[in-house]
View 1: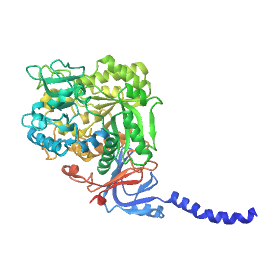
View 2: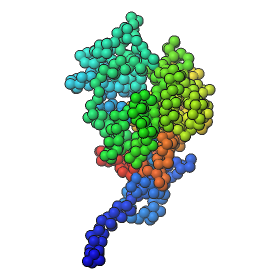
View 3: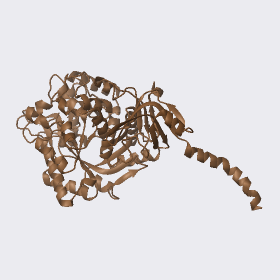
View 4: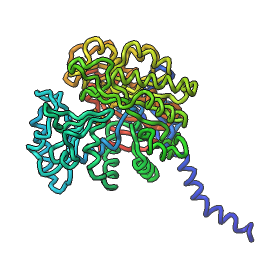
Length: 560
């Protein structure tokens, strides 16, 4: 009886077997494109790409691949340019999302316009307990001076207001916010922070770096819904701008768990390489089981630590060896002494974590270099961990070769140079500027540069960074010859810094960063040919489609 039933069972199973086989064999062939990828240090060109599930099978000519993969679904790229998915090596994912939920005053070129926008936001949100936002930049204003609490009081006095500066290293409070925080003449400065005071010793409303906690610690925690909404908004924005992977600078346990939930549901549109926020309590909790090399098929990783050694140049908190050229007696702020920094570096490295240290001023960069040298002496060869200095913005020329000696990656943000060129030389003078934003100097000595934006400090659009890297000009084409143009990157160097070298800086070069068989199918279609368009137009490039892991996560045509 069993023998007679077997054919019937097979017949019943056959549709499922065939369906399974078709699903496994079905792939996608995207053809009629101008494709580019870096392979073995050379620029590889192609006009078709074949992929199955999330893996690239081949790139080559349309005729060849249409024949080789004749059973695949075909997609016509309509002659548009195809590039590897771009990787931003230094971002603040949740900051990008919160920027969408709060008042954003970035780019406003007067205090009057800034205050007007804050007042309009407060009027439109009468139920908010606190008015929060970010993006102000006094350097863009005619006054070119820090604002005060009294300025904010003119537009909002009944509720506390707290806005962080564009660089995230200074905050601006109104009087009500300072009253809630019990700020007085007796409120002390702390290591790594400074309260700006008037001639009478009263706080003016500006808090630099570590003193920002005096105000921010009084703000209610964001709700779970706000956090989920912010992440969703950030993911949408990153996909829209062609970012298929980002390195999130300072991730806490709560945020990491939310990232995992999004990954488990298939809701991540961008891969996230997360850096643990410091080596304190967050590190102790998140490192219990050691580094997470990858999670959810390389959608997440947690194998690095972010520490900040100093502040920022715009707020004069970047730690300098000599005093600021435009602020005598001020040398900025070191957040830790050498022994404290050494101990944190040693703790992270001992546990197998890549250490990514924010250093902007030349004193901070020297302190961090000394710290990595100490770790090398204590633990031996550290090259496998690929430690990084984040920003490496102003480095004493004699310290630059130490990046090679210590095998460090320079994680740099090209748009910082073009955003800062209106004040950087005023801050540090004509001699120290020689070691500032020195991309070509680093490249010439063989240092890997992982490029990023530091959004929301800068715009999320990576083509702004590619443009700055190549031209060292603002969007108006100024200055005509480029700002210290000898430090500009070639187009190949710029693309490398935003793709394969950024992947290398996350230990992910075997799966991301180039378009070749076996790697993840992360790529973008754009409306301008990066290698042929006039350099002045690079920043105007629009992303038409973003594909992450073989799935189309953004399509401009569906948004129009």
